[in-house]
Each structure stands twice: as C-alpha cells, then as structure tokens.
Image 1 (tube, rainbow, N blue to C red):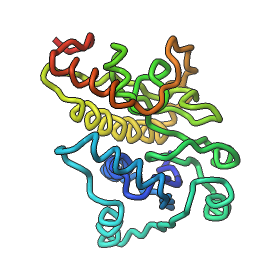
Image 2: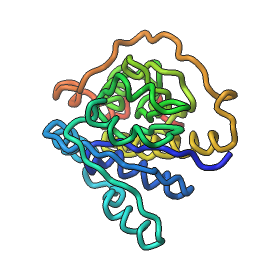
Image 3: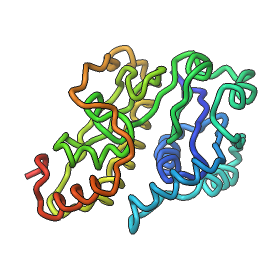
Length: 245
C-alpha cells in the first residue's frame, strides 16, 4: 500500500501536535490538509501543556514545518476553524477521499467526522489505555501508581475507548520530574502515531488492532493542584511504583 491520504487536526500550535507532525514527516507521512482549532479553550490548553513541559525542547511550529515542506515543493492546505465540529470541519474535507483522520491533540470530537474517513480516525493518548483514560494522564499515573506510557487508538463516541493499535510503556527513571514524564509521553505518542501509519502502509492493522478491556479506574479530568503536589513529592522522593531499575 502507498501512503495514506489523511487530514490532521490539532489545537493551534499545540506542542503535542507540533511534535506529532514532526514525527510523521520523518517518514514522509504528509497530511493532505491540516485543520487547526483557534479558540480560547485551545489557547488555554496550549499554555497548560507548555507549563507541563517547561524547560524541555519543543518541536518547530506547524507553520515552520510547512515552510520547510514548501521549500521541497510540497504544499499542504492549512485551514483554521473556531472549533473542531462537523459543521466547521466537514465542508473542508467532504471533497477529499480520506483514508484517515489523525488527531494531533484536540478536544473531544464526536459525530459525523468520526464516520467520514474510509479507515477511521486515530489518536495518540499520553497514557496506557484502558487504565488511564481522560486528561493529565502522566499525573494520574504517578498519583495512582499506574504504569506510564502512550497508546494509539481509534476514536469513537466515548473518551479514549476505541480499539487499540499500539500501546507502549515509557521507561521512568529515578530522578525524572513531572515535566520529564509529560515530555516523554508526548514524544512517545508521536512515535506511536508514526508507527501506526507505517503499519497501515504494510497492511497490518487487522493483525495489530484489538479491543480495549475494562478499566478499574474512572475517566480522569485535569489534575488539581493538590494532586500535582502529591505527584511532584512522590517523584522527588522516588516513591513511584514503576521505575525502571
């Protein structure tokens, strides 16, 4: 199989989406269209994430990555919407015969968008599914002593409940900070997305796809300050249960 035709959705210049695009481009997976959400909530999410990886390297901006492609004669359509919903996104993609839609860090998206591409919509989540669904997965993983990692999965109308393609633990070393964990799972998520598209080109999705089991944990929300304090203290004291020895 050749390269997939795919749309790439992300919150405007979110570091998660910037890293994922960088990873995809290393294997020449070039989206046909990029659709960025430019919203107040997107701005808030971007700033929160930048705080989580403060002091660590960030991939080049989407615009600068597209400029580099343009220098090679490769032009990618880049559109902006106020929100990633069917009303605003579908008019931009309805005339494109998409194999896939790739989420590079978005809000929860439901509805017609999920049913449009031939082979589905996939997302990379910075937590090990099904145990760590929802937001702030590195924090909740440390807080509850859940193994840390990332998962590439199909998107359905639930929250991080779709079939799994790839799932990998992140090696947590003693002395790592919360910022290190957030950055590490960010990079790992991008790598897994790249590997998932490589598996698509090899026709292996049917071999590696499997349904999620049940989780003993709830779907997590953003971690409040008191939880983050516990997380930082556990890491400082090296009390997390899943260090690589």
